[in-house]
Amino acid sequence: MTESDIKKGLAGVVVDYTAISKVNPETNSLLYRGYPVQELAATQPFEAVAYLLWNGELPSEDQLAALRADERAHRALAPNVKAAIDLLPLEAHPMDEVRTAVSVIGASDTTGGGSVLDAAGSPEENLARSVRLYAALPAIVAYGQRRRRGLELVEPRDDLDYAANFLWMTFGEEADPVVVDAFNRSMTLYAEHSFNASTFTARVITSTLSDLYSAVVGAIGALKGPLHGGANEAVMHIFDEIGSAENVVGWLDAALAEKRKIMGFGHRVYKRGDSRVPTMKAALDSLVAHYDRPEVAALYDALEREFVSRKGIYPNLDYPSGPAYNLIGFDTLTFTPLFIASRVTGWTAHIMEQTAANALIRPLSAYNGLDERHVPGASA
Image (cartoon, rainbow, N blue to C red; front, side):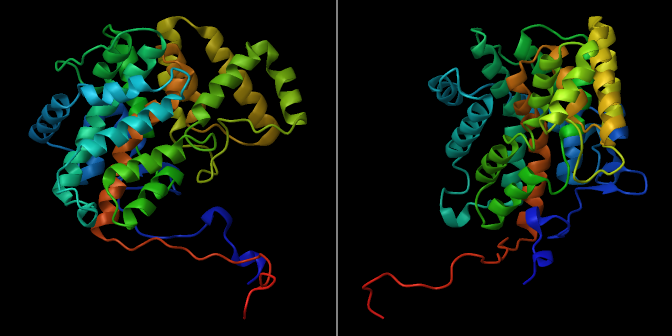
């Protein structure tokens, strides 16, 4: 076997079919079930996007109403989940809180009889579990931020849509429609992206016929890494380091001389720029205007302009989402948990797709260790 036979990171390897999403190379558009994501973000509530990912079609009015009723019935933070979060140190990363909370939810779900042989669950059970996780995650993420700020839990409201209720539970006040719209768009943009690292992790776990919750917990672990979901946190740290647009050139000179990886730029799939960026940048611009923070836009534009001119590498979705979430009022540590609250829809869609046409995912490796040898004194 030669070096060229090894596909590090599975780069370029097609491992299965999926009907959930794809990047259309002709238009450079990310498609959810065939729909360009920018069209969905501009026209659909996040509940409708979740329904689309799970069911393959946009919902009718009655179907959307039914999903909303189901989601709203499961919004409250369960006492045992809250208790588990409260046991964790305040210094724990919020991703650890969310991972723990999902484990508790999974352990509390006794549908299916509890036998490891039945862990995978029926399609109906897994769809119901998907909706419950989707409904519960805003309370988990919101409470995590509030407890780190020394604030009490805010109970959900059933008169608000998903995005508006998420903001209500986090900040304890109704958000302006401009803010709700920007947040809703971000949730749609983050919901799904084919066989990325966390989704593939979920599919690998699912392929063993493990349960949906275990697959989601594994996906959360993959998303925590800065080369995947943690990148939006890293973008905000970069903005904090630079300080203002006037400091961009000097900061970038030093960063490139030190061969630092500049997070928020580049993508393994997109070669002509991330198709989600214009939609998220428009949402960021609306927030900049709403909060009257032109210095944020100036820093954003200066760093993008300088980095693209030097390296020819364009921003990815994390670049505009980081400052957008900061303007809304989310702590930087909360950014990746927000990613979870969105991507759980895509993860669970893939879990159900993997289960429906399963094959155990078990790749081969090329051994490059020592040749066979024997322990001194061992009998032949």
